[in-house]
Image (cartoon, rainbow, N blue to C red; front, side, top):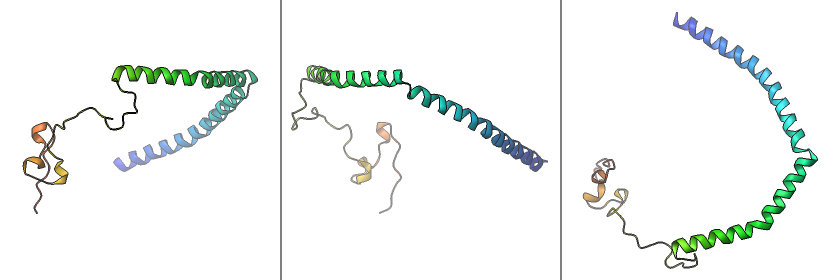
Length: 120
């Protein structure tokens, strides 16, 4: 009984796929042709070129504003390579994958899963 239902389902899915893909392909082709027609329209191309020129003209100003804002917020200009990161103390002693003491082999106390015990 189950095999008959599975075959019926498979047949239905197959027929639906074939019929859907044929009508779906026609719909896809119509949408593709319409998109191409719109893209190639002279008014659309003119607008695209205007926007592109506007972005090229104003992008350097926008970048400078972003850099100035980041510099103001962080107090650094980005050229300070020796102090690229703030003073940071790690919250763990070591990485359990690197081995080490028994305490370093388990992060369960910090909310992580305990690492599996290895026999050496």
